[in-house]
Amino acid sequence: MGLRHPPAMLQEHFLTRSRRHESLMGWLFAIPWVLGLLLFNLFPFVYSFGLSLTSFRIGYPTEFIWFGNYVEMFTDDPVFGKSFGNTAYFVALGVPLGLVTSLLLALLLNQKVIGVPLFRTMVFVPSIVAGVAVALLWMWILDPNIGLVNHLLREIGIRSPPLWLQDEDWAKPALIVMTLTGAGGATMVIFLAGLQNIPTELYDAARIDGANSLRQFFFVTIPMLSPVILFNTITGIIGAFQVFTLAYVATGGLGGPNNSTMFYALYLYNISFWWGRFGLGAAMAWFMFVVIMVFTMAQLALSKRWVFYAGE
Amino acid sequence: MATTATQPRTIGTGRRSRIHWPRIIHTAFVYMLLISISLFFFFPLLWMMTTAIKPTSQMFQIPPIWIPKPPQWDVFHTTWNRTNFSVYLGNTVLITVLSMIGRVGSCALVGFSFARLRWPGKNVLFLITLSTMMLPFQVLMIPQFLIFKEIGWINTHYPLWVPSFGGAAFYIFLMRQYFMTMPRELDDAAKIDGCGWLGIFWRILLPLSHPALATIAIFTFMSQWNSFLEPLIFLSSSKKYTLALGLAMFRDQFDVDWNAIMAMSFLMVLPCLTIFFLAQKYFIQGISTTGLKG
Image (cartoon, rainbow over all chains, first blue to last red; front, side, top):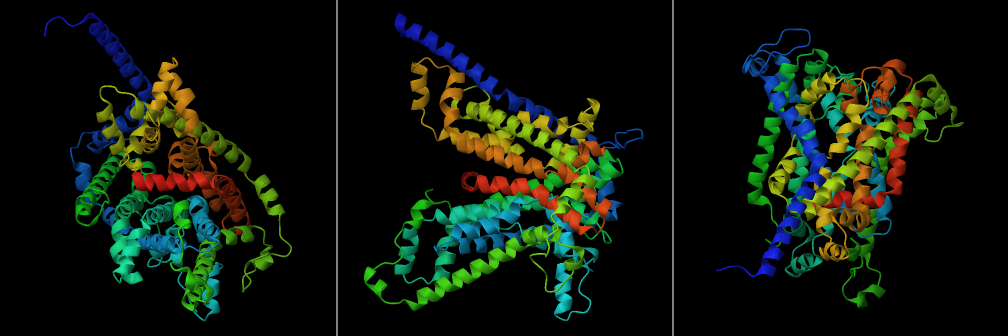
């Protein structure tokens, strides 16, 4: 091509100018997040890995010790193993129980009867009352001597009911029950939205083919709901790994009795902010991050086998 | 949501005139389940309220007394006076309000940029943004503590609200998705009328995004109001405490005074309940969209 037509050149000139202006504006609009990302996320993220390779402890000289903290964690700290086991227990039992409860609630609240909004609200409200207040409430309900639950248990003839949060074997199940009261919250609402997105024609077709409601559930509802199940499972597991407030408030930060509620995040907090061992704490945090990453990736990889995306 | 409710419930109108027993039994069964389960879930909250206003003599009676006679309303008044509750409340309101302003503002700006503008590096930055959602706070808390200590922010409220002005990955994503559903013709029309990018954002798109903004504001309110770990790490003197932190410390102070503890818990929970009832629609919408598109 020879010389371009002058008006086209002019047009291009203005176009690149407006493009450049757009780029500039794009960055300007994004500046809060660029700063937030760098200052409060990426820099601390890298910094904590650096810290995890040092012996940093408040009031002590700092040395670079390579993977010494990681070695100490796994070989020289029985509480670390116990806290990891406690969290694994909580994830393995609490997450599936929570998911099933939420799904059952969603199925029930998806029934087309009058008054469902009222019931939905009643089930949802406990979930917005989060954290400290809920922990205190349940400490009161589960108080071994004067709590409601043990009063009722004694009333029906159980002489020595469990001490719940003060009993090594019952403390974790009690905490799981506490978290289950939030099962009517976000997870349930997401399931409910997922249920309402399933086209009714699919059920009609299944019925014509002679599928009873159990079969409809397993061959229509579950596959159509699988992306939502995946989402709720991943967020549920990430949340369960970080369980902290309930255990902290219920045990005064001690993770008792006999470390039975010393969850990973609680132990990490104690190591860092009680003992001032920031190097070891950072190593524990990084290990937690890696475990969460691996879990999430594994689930995303496995999901190709069971998650069904309609319209793909 | 609304469309499914209007679907015809039975096929073949001829059957309706007769009493359809299986259907009635089914409905009765559903109601029984609904009532018992929702009472079961709601009961702990009621127990909190009724414990607060119960005279001590009625606290341990079996069967439990649900409506105390006479209710001790002054428990709120006396506990309020006995504690720093008003200070904690003031601190919490300050932190929560500033966080809401910061997060709504920054997430709207950044979300707009991601949804509407073309700039080099955008896609990479967006991917990084999404992946930060997987970062647990535990990985960030120690370095954040050291940074805030370095600049003298420990035992101040800054670490609790300043980061909100940097935005949050999840809500930026939410805003971006919301802006992307709006037709681009709006932008073009505004451009022809002489609007710049700021004008398009401020005058055209923002007024149309109330639902998304409200969702972010409400979720931020809930998380900041109930936040525990951050105040625990960054605050040390009780004058600076938030409600959540103050309430947790109450327990040590009042050990078994469950009247007082439940009364204060109830006061702390009350704003959350109020906001939920006022803005239930945004709650449910916000949660459903995040779950289905996320």
